[in-house]
Image 1 (tube, protein in one colour):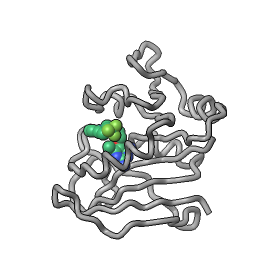
Image 2 (cartoon, helix red, strand yellow):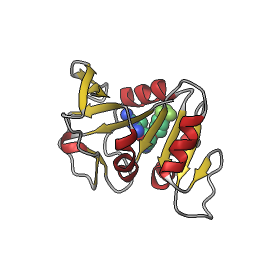
Image 3 (cartoon, helix red, strand yellow):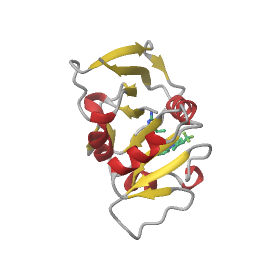
Length: 166
Ligand SMILES: CCc1nc(N)nc(N)c1OCCCOc1ncccc1N1CCC(C(F)(F)F)CC1
C-alpha cells in the first residue's frame, strides 16, 4: 500500500492559520471525502484537534493520530508515537487503498520523502497563514493531472492537481 499526501493550499502554499483553514471551499471537502473514504487517514495531533467535533473521527476511514504525548487519547482513532512507525504499520496491511496523510504542516514535511502521490487542491486566494505545505521539487514530482480552474459556490476559484513521483 502506498503513501499519499492530500492538502488544500492557497497561494504561496498557505494551508492553515492559527489551527484553522482560512477559507471555505465545499467542493474541496467533497473531494477530500471522496478520495479518502475507505482508506486510512494519518494526521498530527493538532489536525485531529482542529477537526470539527461532528467530523471526529472521520467516518468510513481508519483514523490514526501521531503524537509524542504518551498519554494522548483520541476516541475513535488509533494513536501512534512516531510517524515512521505509523506509516510502516499502515502500509503493511494488505488493503490496496493508499494511506492518506492529511495534515498538518509538520506531518506533511516528515512524510513527503515516503510519499508516491500528492493530491493538492489549489485555492486562488492570497491569504495570510502561519502554516505552509512543503515545497514540491519539480525534479522529483510530475503533474499527473490537473483540472481547469473551477469556481466554488462560495465564489473562490480552485483546481485539483495530482502529482506522482517521477
Ligand atoms: C477538508 C480539508 C482538507 N482538504 C484537503 N484537500 N486535504 C486535507 N488534508 C484537508 O484537511 C482534512 C483535515 C482537516 O479537515 C477539516 N478541517 C477544518 C474544518 C473541516 C475539516 N473537514 C471537513 C470535511 C470532513 C470530511 F470528512 F467531510 F471530508 C473532514 C474534516
